[in-house]
Length: 206
Image (cartoon, rainbow, N blue to C red; front, side, top):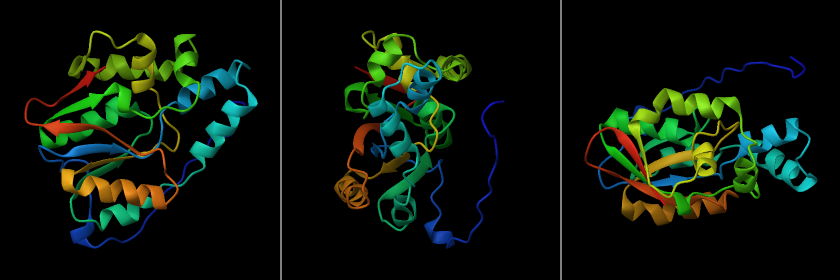
């Protein structure tokens, strides 16, 4: 590979009462995403030498922003489940939440934050092979609204490097969670959906 590849392991201690798993979402929870999607699309465009300076700067800024709110979110009442969006894309990691809690996750496509320009780049065919493989792996458990475009689907399965935190919290805690993200420099965090009773799947509405 022309790119360096390395792995890291982070170890630490946490109080048992503050452990936030990806299996404890509750029906009625709202879903909050801490960072915009599209890192994989930008990296695909970079490899094809079609990514401008602005897109490159956005990609670097997004991937180098550490998910520091995670520690504070673990200490908040009303935060039930917590994970981060990485190689399986938003849909893949949300499915883990849905399967772990045996609930249905419902997403509002228009509410999901995206990095600048990525929707057009995805429409033009700049997305990673992993995006398609992700869909092949778990698409059977996802229901897409009729108006969801192939480019939008590619972004939902887009693998993220240093992706955002995905929070499942009580509705009354959502304002405090968003305020925490904002204080920590994650002003693009958004409520993107909710958890409901039902089968372990994800439904995406336009």
